[in-house]
Each structure stands twice: as C-alpha cells, then as structure tokens.
Amino acid sequence: MRCHGSLGQGKEEGGLQAPPLAGKPDRQHLQRALLDGVGSNGQFLHPLMPRYHIDAADLDDLLAYLSVIGKDTPGLTDTVLRVGVSLPDNVYGAAIQAGLNKAFDQVANGVYGRKLELLVNPAPDQVFVEVASLQSGAQATTSSRIEVNQLAVIGPLPAPGLDSFSDALAQDSFHLLPPVREQASALLVRAALDAHGVASNNRATQQLTLIYDQSNDPALHALLKELREQARANHQSLREQIWSAKVSQSGEAVIYLGSAANLREVLAATGDGLVYASAIHTGPASLQLPPAQAARLRLLLPWRTSSPVFDLPAAYNDVAYAAGMVLIETLKRSGRQLGRAELLQQLNQLRDFTVPGFGTISFHSGQHYGSRGGQLLTVDVEHGIFKVLRRW
Image (cartoon, rainbow, N blue to C red):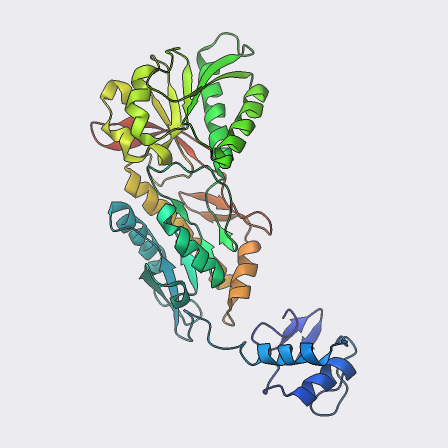
C-alpha cells in the first residue's frame, strides 16, 4: 500500500516510482507475479518486488479479497464526504452541531473538490468518519457497530451529568480531551495550589476528603489507586469516604467523584471547605445550587473555551469546533486520493496542530488523547454561567 497507494494509483517511495496497478487480477497472472516475479506483460518485475510462497487455498482467498476491495468507500464520493455525528435532541446536541457547521464553513468549497456533508445520527455505513459525537451509555451499541465498520472517530465527547471513569479507547478513536485519570489528578493539583496560596508552610501535608459512590466499577478503583499515589507525591493525605448522607463534616477541601444527583447533599454535609469536582460529571446540577453552596465549588473542565465566561452548551460548541478543525486539517494532509487508511495515517501523524481558543492537539500511534489543556471554573448560579478561574 505504501508503494502503489491504497487505491493502486501508483506513487513514489524511496526514490522509486511505483507504477499504477490496473486491470482485474486473474489466477494465472497473480500466481506468476507473486511466485515468479513476472508481470502480466511477461516482463520481470523490479528486483525490489518481493516473491512469495503461497498455497492454492490461500491464493483463492486472496483472489476473493481482491475482487471486493476497491469498491466505493461508504460516505465518500468524488464530490461529497459525509461526516456523521451522534447527538441527542437537546441544547447540547444543537451546540455541537453548530460548532461542527462553523468549522465546515471554513471550507465551504470543499476539500480537494469534496464538500463536507454533516449527517446527524446516521448509520455507520452511511458516513466516512464520525466527529464530536456525544457519548453515553446509550451509545454502546452504536460504538460496537462503528468498530465493525472500521469507522474513524474524532473527538467523541462525554455527556454532561454522567460520571464515567473508563479511559478505554475504541479502535481508531482519537480523543481531543485528556484521559479521566489526568483530569482527576488535575483536581488534586488544583487543590494543592489553592492550599499553598493560603498556607504559611507549603511543605505541610494537606488534608483532603475524597468522596465517591459505592461501586464495583474496576475503572473507578483503578482511578482511586492512582489518586492515592498522586496525593502522596503532592504532600496530600486523602480521607476516603463512600458517599452517604451521614458523611462526617471535616471542613477540609473535598474531591468529589460521585453522582451529580447527590451534589447538593454533599455540599451540605461537608462543612465549609472548597469542593473540587468535574464540570462534566456535575453537569447542569451545579447551576441549581443555592448561591452559598455554589460559591464553594471548583469545577474542572477538561478543555479550553473561547470565552472566560460561558454556559455549558457554549463549551460543547467550542470543543466540537476544534474536532471539526482537526478533521479538516487531516483531510488536507491526506490528499485527493483519500481512503480510511490515509485518514488514519494522517491522524496518527498530527503534531502540534493549534486551534485558536482551544489549544494544541497532537496524536501519534499508541497515543490517541490529543490535548492536555483544561480550566478550573467557578459557578455563577444567578446568571447560569461558569467563569474561568485558572487555565492551563
């Protein structure tokens, strides 16, 4: 594929020009080429062309495979490239769709002659790539179908208000956001920075309360193990408590990893210390708190927004725009002779691509989390917005 191209169009490799491959292979010509290095014109192939040992059954299988490859790639024609996005019918879905459309408007005339067409909630075999889909438990079946169809996925997004701790990646999935373990670790770091800002002895051990729900989720328990190790490195001591309404009041800062449904009770039960949590896990519940409780919240959003003051749908609009720009950049780098292999290759080679207002994105083989940026937020319940306290 590297020499002749995934479409058999021919290309230069290592200073040599590999010719295009044409014509339908038959058994006799294919066998002579593979075993004897003789082309269909009777001439010997280039010495760099490998010779193979292959039995009759494997040759039959290869011929069957060659008879089906090269068919039309789903979602891709000479003039249109169809992009899928899985979205709910709510303000978050509308914001994500608007963010993608804003990105696609940057290439209104298309990329190499192909216009980008956005399809909402399509079947995986209708589109070439999926971008910025909102992930939840309901998408599990869809995700398995995507893997079966070998569909590349760029920038899947966590649904607000749902707590998920798994960092497992689907095949050919490229995330713009940092993994959950890094997000949770960032909560500890932010708590340490805040404590050092008010403490006279910055080497003193900071006492923290870590609250989470009763769960058999192995991803949560793996995360807790990493947080314990991180806390020791940060000179922090974690007092762990499984959530119940009888959790002891300590007045210490709290790291909360539990359900958004219990957020109000947690704040009421934990004294007057700051409570650090994920803006995604708490979702809109953080905007429904009494002002005094909301003032104690410090929320981590695992991406940067274009404005320091925003509501949550606007944040999703920003990250969807970034995902759309990543797609456009990789399409430009892939060239006109486009297939899924070319797209995946360019995604794996994307380095230091900057989206204004969002930050720098890099992928490589084995590392499909593209960004390390984020923000620490405060909550303004009166106006229903979040304000950036710190960004990195």
